[in-house]
Length: 539
Image (cartoon, rainbow, N blue to C red):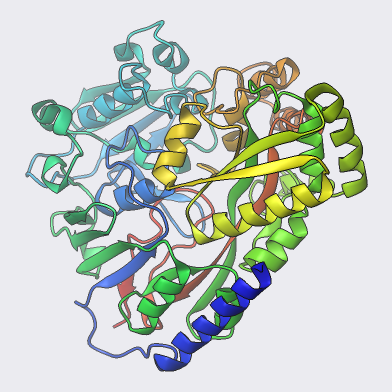
């Protein structure tokens, strides 16, 4: 039946391709014509202190700016500020550039950054990213986030309106790239306090200091951005209007692309095969990792043999090559390939090796042990979001598991991403297909998630040996020794994946995109934000 459905989808796509006249042709004189981008997930929030998802980060990066911005080569360049770093690497002094201002005419000041960073760690904000300032080793960040110290004791200060100073307890090599994330953008305190609960609830309840202003907000449908002539680097930007449309179905997006109503979209499954030879096709391997997250306080998922059986029964190569077909790669661990490199330029994944097996016979052995503890009939609910790719992967995992593990029933729960994330954050699931997009090019961006007490540890993993290694490598005796720290990360990942089976990596995300010929400026970033802020029509 599934093959029949695929065949029907393929025929429909071919019909659309032929019926709409093939690839849209570029034409001249488009400088002021909008560029429309299809997103597969809705906007969750425009409050930069509360954002956790890719769609929110993407839209925030369009209209707001931080101290630094990401270049295509993965390095940081000045945005709202230039900077100096002390010889010991513990003090960063940022100098706000002349002409930086908000959309209401107020200047962007150092105090705007102090207020935003303090708000991020304030327990009253309840940001899921409150931990991130401690990742940077900002003085007192952990104590502020944990409520032991007030937020005004965070190691940041504004000695004057143009100078923002960050004090660290340990050097942090990736600080300048990590702070390109919207979490670190400034907030105008006077405006924020005047808005109260309405802050970030609509286009009139935000101030903008970035390349665009948000001029249209149709919830769940369309978000419009218009060039901001007051942006301090406005002369570097050409495009007048960029529109984001929420399109969950790939075939719908393809039809709109053929009619030139959409200019950039992500392809999945059979659509990749259809379009990979067309002009405008782009393919790349990203740092994002998709994985199965077990709720470890659930009686069934607490059983290690069951988790091992599930991991061993999933054919990750088939999912990447036969289901997704978009350049995705079977996971070898939670850290992907071509993502993080040691001081000698060696890929982390090459050193850490492959931690994952596919072995249905061994899976059946561990499932038999699980049944001794849990009973002959075991039912697990698999929770996933309503995008085409997530549905396809979840359905194939379901089939693989029930085929390999006799006596296992997999029920399915499919919800919009916003609902799925809310349930994940409230630990309301048994087994969830989820993902993490890295914030910076270092293993720590993944491994920090699963430490005991982390706000992102949604499976409630509690591994003493794992925690000890992460602390040792990030804050303890090895934190200033690059080689020892790297080995700590390798050892910790092995415990997480191959010994405790606390999470079950499935695939490293590869994006296959169609970009209308003539559209330029998409930044193919492994980490960070700002993928579409420089998009424009070629002149």
